[in-house]
Length: 144
Image (cartoon, rainbow, N blue to C red; front, side):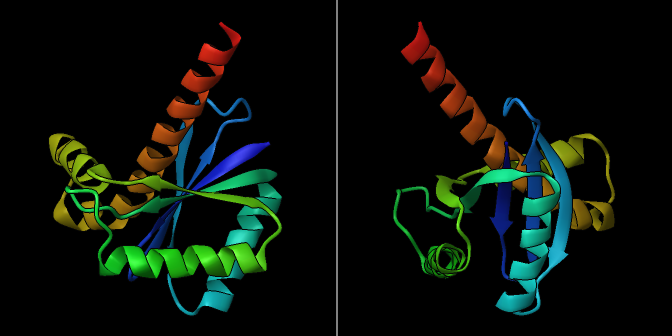
């Protein structure tokens, strides 16, 4: 079973999927948000197509560790998913993921227009990869 990473933004939802071994996250897509019902149907398609057993939603946390307005909206989205899906949903601190994604695309010399299209799915991939690294390190410590 795979993991699905979500970068939940005000206009777009970045999507990433793990490999079957849950070691590597792959940027998959960007969903242009419309309404929660439609967004949910698109997420369900990824769950079914990739046999997802867990969703990892990036939680926007300020540098001092507090939660602002964007985090409140993300929590509402996570609650909506929990009430709508029978799947494990976790949140993961997404501090710096957008900045790291932006920096890597600038270093790759991508135009501003291309960066804007890619940023959310790259951020979703970073969120998911950080989570995968954490659970795999934790598993290694428990098995070592």
